Image 1 (cartoon, rainbow, N blue to C red):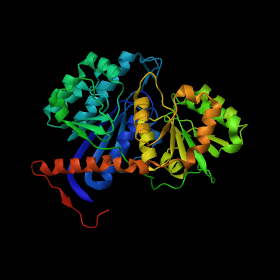
Image 2: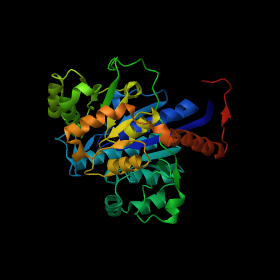
Image 3: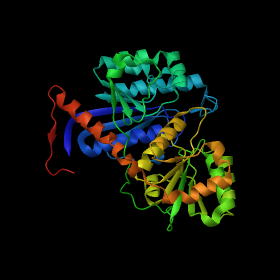
Image 4: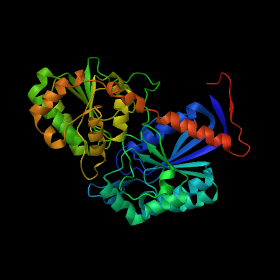
Length: 403
């Protein structure tokens, strides 16, 4: 393990829908503190359930008021009694005061260049003046070029990226997808882009979760669960018509699934012998490691987990309101990393049952080079180490035998 001389890293995760942003930031933060002493990381997050996750030493989070993104793309405060404008003002104030107090050496912004409704802009300008290294982290796939261009044009996001950010990290391999394709990015923006590779996930040192079945099982995950009920209903319909030929299934609904949909799925599962259901497990890596195969929607984290644990996977991607999952799933299918069914096709319970029965015997992702795409965390550690070594009076040195 090496030591970086008292490096403060601030991360921003707007978290209006799902768990993907927070889990991505957490994976990066944990990797950095596991590889370097002297690093302290603070994550600013709007996630409603940030406290449900375990964080390593020297990694902590600051919770800002939660804002929910509705299916129509509009936002609303999690607390119906607080006006959205007031909520956004509180978020912006907390973000700026956190940056002023923490005085980061590096700021990593996840996905949204200016933050939710521009809430990061004052903080980014302040940190730029403090000579903080500003990094924008982008998923491998953001959305369709048309939708993303329309969204970014409204805030002149590309111009701000060019003027404010020092680096653009792409959390995927260069030959998988270009997240800025079709946006008209300038050479100055392109020169800042570094394709890292996907972020490898690994099982934590926590004890084996009690939710892990003792017999072979398919793991069905809806990610955070906010839009996962449709997939769960499709899988239950497939088991209702073909359970005799299917292995046991474990459904993980996700903590953000609406309560009425969660209640109905639990009710349906009570009558099904080969289906278990839980709401949430903060040690999903353990459940994935033990599964024979994965059924999911192809959010970024689910896809990284499929590759990391080298599991056969059937993907039923969300196609609206964003096309991110569909684009990622289609590209992964082209590379023979996963199987994919569109949501309309998965409505055919007989066809889905047949696909599920064959899934455990599917070729694993490593046969198509999937595990070789997982060098993102290593690239990040190398980047931060080189940056620290190049600072004036840098005191990067090896700690012999440190752990």
